[in-house]
Image: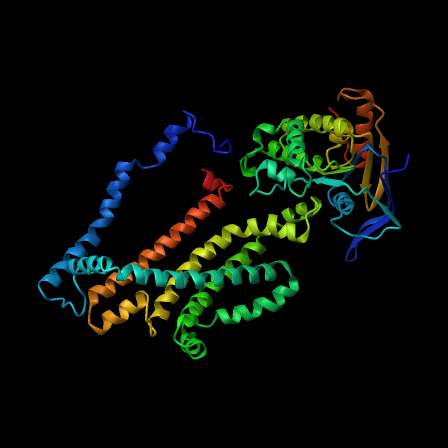
Length: 234
Length: 277
């Protein structure tokens, strides 16, 4: 099967500072990949390049045409209702119908006429997810989308994203600094450090994944030590 | 509509009522503030009636009311008002279109900013009412210099506030718009214009007050119609009562146009929490 994303030797520097140093990245259709890294490791830069918001140099940069992004902030247009935000920039006769359906999927159809500034943090992020999914992306880019949510809302969002991924089937690249989030959701986890991938881990555990699973605990400890964090010993 | 704010629950009510003064107390507060203006009005009437304040300096309140009734009954005031209003409408429309176009070009393109902003900042520094002699030389004494003065005066607040609004639009939203596949025009239409609208509406209100001010000045020069002509005529015949009536009409029209913009504002900015609340 050909890769949906195929990137060879991707580099990006800001002035004298080299953020990405010749990265190779392949993502298969429908694959869920998580990208971990410390602050300033360049993981957001990589995502922004995949989104077409930043430019660098590469030997090969093969990307699917339909890509959607969900950012850390919902970035909804405050002057448009939830429904109008979801349909913004989408053409076609069945747009409204599809938007309704997608809002149903994220559990927000009862708020479709609400103004974004009246939504809670979790609701706003669900609206942003609906806005990304209604475009039927082949690649869904998630840039720390749950980082500003409280812990309980974040857990609910994890299962929502998992269900949406199963239902809509896009390939996903999730940028996060939450190791458990990556383990709970991804097929494959990449660790970015000092401009290149320092580790690649497959997570061969079926869903739903329990935190108590010893295999997952081993992966978590492994990733944490890669990120330079020693787990607490109690 | 389903996007109305939720009604206050029982728990919210006592807090709200404790903070907001009751209508009776507010009326009392307003009544207290009216005491000194009413006293001045009485003093003015007494001074006029006893002849200490002669009518050729300033007519008394009752004379002014009588003059207003006379001017309305003869239809003179309404006709003049329409002429003056149309001048403001024409001049302000020109200012609105020019100001919005210039601010958009300067706001979204770097070259546009470089070409448009410096000359406008220089022109802004000029006392624009002083341009009237030049406008008369260029355009004569007809409608053009009056409308031109209104347009010239009102264009700056519109341009400046809209440009400030465009520059204040969150760049993260623009970025989001790009990832949603919006074209440059789509980004202007869906992000820059609605994002800068709160500022633009402030500029429109300010521009309208400048427009009425410009009209008052412009109409003093050889006005053969409009409120300005009524004032000129009254000045020649020492009718201070008529002059005061006309000044009040100017003030009233300023308030009315401002109120209209506030209505537009309440609808167009209903997405803002402070308007929702």
